[in-house]
Amino acid sequence: MSRWEEFYESLPPPDGFDDAKQRLHEFCKRLGAKNKIVLVTSGGTTVPLEHNTVRFVDNFSAGTRGSASAEYFLSSGYAVIFIFRQKSLEPFARHFMGLKFLNMLEMAEENECLSIKVKGSHVEGLRPVLEQYQEAEGSGRLLQLPFTTLSDYLWLLRAASECLSSIGPRAMLYLAAAVSDFYVPTDKMPTHKMQSNEGPPSISLQLVPKMLKPLVNIWVPNAYVVSFKLETDAELLIKKSREALNKYNHKLVIANILQTRKYKVMFVFPNHDYEVNLNEDEIKKGIEIESKIVDDLAKKHELYIGGMV
Image 1 (cartoon, rainbow, N blue to C red):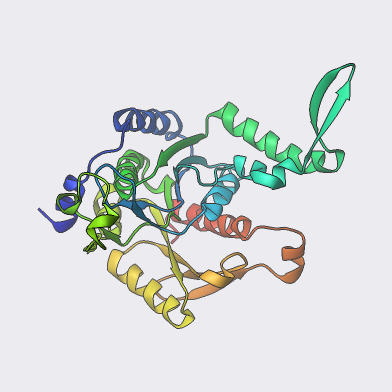
Image 2: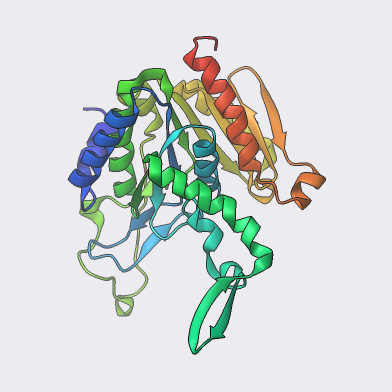
């Protein structure tokens, strides 16, 4: 048994996994015959430090790129499986989060009845979001499955990948989740909450085996697989992205630097790369770089389906 198989078999499946697997099967069966389907992963994984988890190691990600990209994939005609960190940003709902949304509302009292309305200046901005959401819901082209831990994520990733293998090259995997590189083996975890009166704990993190290799070669071998690489050192970005492509044999790495990721990314292929960015005017207009990323990917995916790349 390979290291990744041993690792995978050591992980407990998430609660409700059988139901999630059934929903994936029904989604792929219903939409896979005629549609392109993209699996979008989004948000960060947690690594528990106790079996009865109070403390955990987390990965930085609010799910901004994944949730925005899911919307643009839907607009481009894809069916979308959205595997996301629970309580991170979700497609469409992301526009209605926190104070930004509350500032769009106003209260009005008429005939002793209190009503809450969207301020007139925001109605036109919200209308397309609601229309797109209703279309996605009505057509059943969006399936959302939440995860919290690294274990949850990997079980759902494998189940979704194996489900998508049935539609061959019409499947795309857009792996935008921030997945932990380290974990604590289950046999090394305490059962209960670590006690501070026992002094500072000694925690030994181990490397998570890379799942791209079995994903690309075994689980969904004919899909168009896109991974992401986030770095803080620009000198490492292209080098590490190309190393990943050579090692795992997937199609593309979308590489970005932490500080500039919202308006500039690099599309890295085995033998070339180029920049996708927003200019100053596009930034002022509120255009999201994910719209450009998805537009470019949809064109490349069509070429791949047609056997031209």
